[in-house]
Length: 189
Image: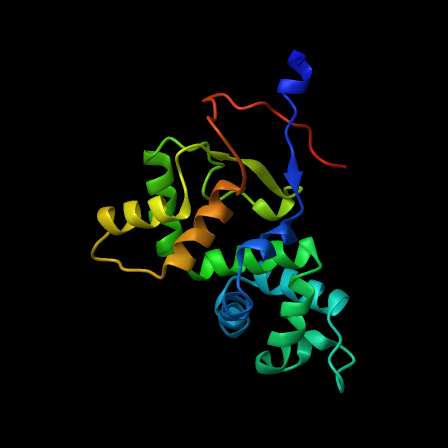
């Protein structure tokens, strides 16, 4: 394999995360996000409204973003399965809603020497999830490490796993050792 081939970075579109989520958990994440979005900074609300307006149709509403949150859960979940942009804005808002968990997971992954973007980076601008996951790490190990490090802050395993995926910008498709200086990629056009 050439040096150039070794340096290529592969991304999966954000909606590939659906392969790792049950329908029930996906709807739970979306429900929590839709009901809490009004308490977040306007940028999150505006991005979500744009995506709902573009990707969701709710009978009786010219602008589906204006429908009550309870009516939006199912159609947004359907869009979440097909639209990478919808996944990105939902997960960004969900992570903001869970800011304390986000900080703890960032600290946990950093302590385990994961390569991470800064905590405040706008992950919605990325082309998707990286396909390489650190060898020897799985959701069970990460959940156990979280429970050991933060016994005073119990969290659902699904929430810990989802935050690990979002902050690392990785899906566990290919397991291998990750170097300290990962290859760079150009911004997707």
